[in-house]
Picture 1 (tube, rainbow, N blue to C red):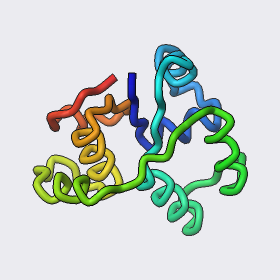
Picture 2 (picture 1 turned 135 degrees about the vertical axis):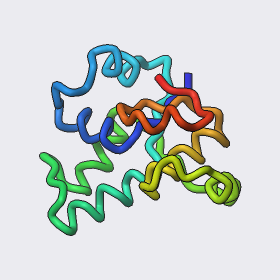
Picture 3 (picture 1 turned 90 degrees about the vertical axis):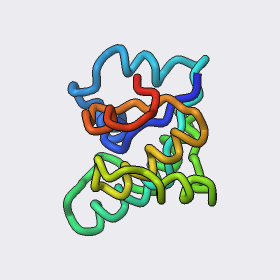
Picture 4 (picture 1 turned 180 degrees about the vertical axis):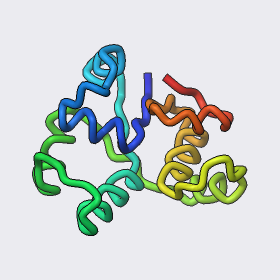
Length: 126
């Protein structure tokens, strides 16, 4: 299966946060699953680190190695993602989450999130 994980899920996974449900950990670590990280999540994390709203136990350079070691794939933005984003209803105002939703719609990926607002969109959720 192909999964696109929301930014907070990635952060919880990196930090070993107990908020991350066991069944989600199993999905993420199952080698049969392809786990994708949106470039939007990396952009969001970098911005939040730079303005002091987020701190991680690893540096950004270590994050790249962490993602590679865990076989996470970076989902780059494509022009088609922007076209879908343009037409998304504004159930959700967060631009990073809106891009994740658009990417999941276009790629037909399942989103792993705890954000209930994602249910308002026509996307698959884990």
